[in-house]
Amino acid sequence: MLIGIISDTHDHLDNLRKALEIFKSRKVAHIIHAGDFNSPFTWRVLKQFAGGFTGVFGNNDGERVLLKKKYQERIYTQPYRFSLNNRRIVLMHEPDVVDALADSGHFDLVIYGHTHEPVIRKAGNTLVINPGEVCGWLYGNPTAAVADLETMEAEIIPLAGLPCV
Image 1 (cartoon, one colour):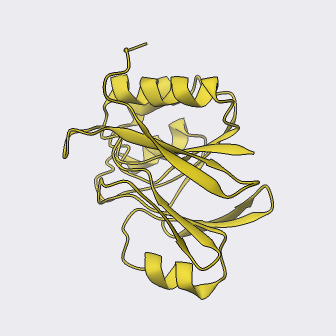
Image 2 (cartoon, rainbow, N blue to C red; image 1 turned 90 degrees about the vertical axis):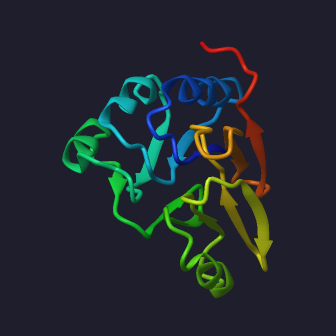
Image 3 (tube, rainbow, N blue to C red; image 1 turned 60 degrees about the vertical axis):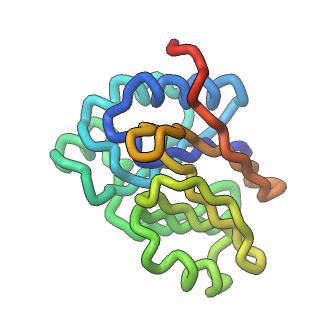
């Protein structure tokens, strides 16, 4: 099962559309958002995705009530633990306890955002992913990630230079 991972979209709808097109072309089955949507109108783009969705709130998300409503109650407070394709996943925005969770051995996948810097690394048997920033506002390098829950391999996908759809 392929999952698409995004974070720190910060209302950049054009780059969000680019990420969604990549996810569709790769037959991603589920999107995970590690926070900082910012506004509920991001749902205008993500509602076009036919697969599953899970997200957490970030430190810049306003109007949380409407965000939860638009995303059909699939945005949670962090850390959020869940299973997908028999993989134990913990999702958060801030990276404060990433290392402790990864080192605990309780999770197959630890996903976080907030730093806007893409990371893919292993901590023992745990895959740790920060997809970077979809928005590109901070570093000018918009990215997303795709992970395979069968092989537990992942890649960072650059969004810069891709045509707007």
